[in-house]
Length: 206
Image (cartoon, rainbow, N blue to C red; front, side, top):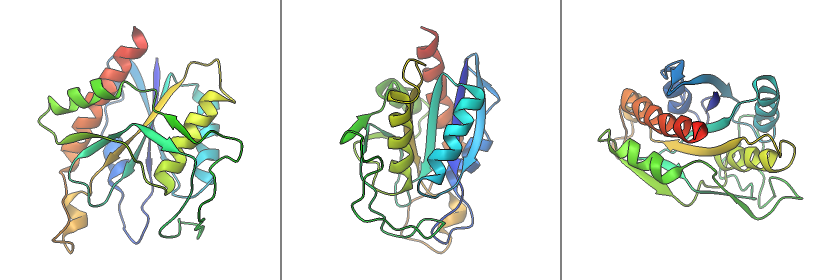
């Protein structure tokens, strides 16, 4: 059993991204599953391409993408990805699409196939702020969430790969000069993701 977990490179002028920093802290095995960790570019289309290559290399049972949600005060387990790229700022290659589809032949939205409510409950049991979110935004986080779901429903249909997305807040180092922004300890973020992965591994094994 394998779970592929990804985090993003820094973007938007930040020199760190808590999504991949937390992923790096994850154990190599959780709940009997091998945890494969990967940093992906904060770039439209390229993020999907490199992740697609990795999927075909390791053929995971689940793909869990993690991204930064600056301004959030809790971990957010995302419910739905929408077929829109509408970037408030450029990505790391300077792309800034406006009202463009992620996939022109895709449906309007995909729901996460992860056990999101059980994940929420497991994270909550760690006394970590957690919520289920119904909007992953319209930047590269939503782009990769939608893109992986689309691949699982089309190119990889029949492989049984489940996938979804988790947003995490800023970490303390990022808000030294942002006194109005909430943050969370990196170790607490990693513990929350670990709890979620334990639930995912259990669901795969059922």
